[in-house]
Image (tube, rainbow, N blue to C red):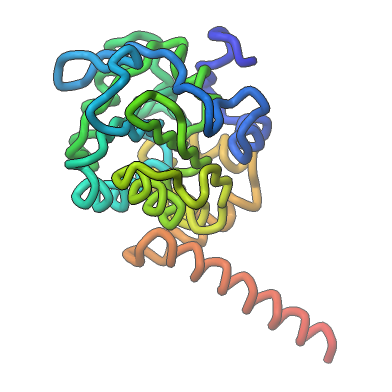
Length: 265
C-alpha cells in the first residue's frame, strides 16, 4: 500500500501511470461498504460516511486540477448531474495532483490543496459539492488512489458500482439510473478504458501545458507513446477531446500506411 511519504510525488512515473490502469486487489468493490471518511467541503460544512443511511445514494468521484481525465470528464458529469442530481448526491474528492508541474505544484499543505479545489471549481464550474482530502491522501489511498475513479453507494453505504474512469459514460449512466430505481446496476464493475482514455489523452497536452514544463517532460519520460499521441491530438483543437485523439490515431495510421506502401515499391 502507498504510504504518505511516497504518495505526494513531484514527478509522474511509468509505475504510477501503470497503476492507474487497473484497480488493485484491495480496492473497495461492489458489495462492500464505502470506506470511512469525514472531509471538509469547499463551500463549508463536511461530508462523511457516518451519514448513512442516507436519503439519497452517493456518487463519489476523485479528481485534481492537473488531471486530463478529470478535465475531460467534467462536462459529461455535469450533464449527468442535471439529470440525476435531485435523486443522487454527487461529490468530487480533490486528491493529489495527477501531473504536477511548476505552475500546479503537488500540494504540501491543506491550504494549497484548498486553492487547487477553488481553481478546479472556477475552471470547470462544477455545480455539485467538492470535498478536500488531506495532504497525505487518507481517503484517496483507502479508495485505491486512482486519479479519476468513481464509486456509487446506495442509501445504506454499500457500493453498488465502481468505475476505473468517470469517463465511462454508458456504465455510469446505467448505474445512476438503477440507483434511482433502487435496483442493482446491470454492470457493477467497470474497467473500460478506450472511450475515457481517448477523452483524457485529447486533453493531456492542454493540461500538462497548464501544469508546467516539468509535467510535460515527465509525461514524455513516463509514457512516450501516450505523450506523442497527446501532442498530435492537441493539434486538432478545437475538436472535442475524444475526437482529437481519434484524429491523432487516424493520422498515425494513415502515415504508417503510406510509409509501408512506399517501402514496398
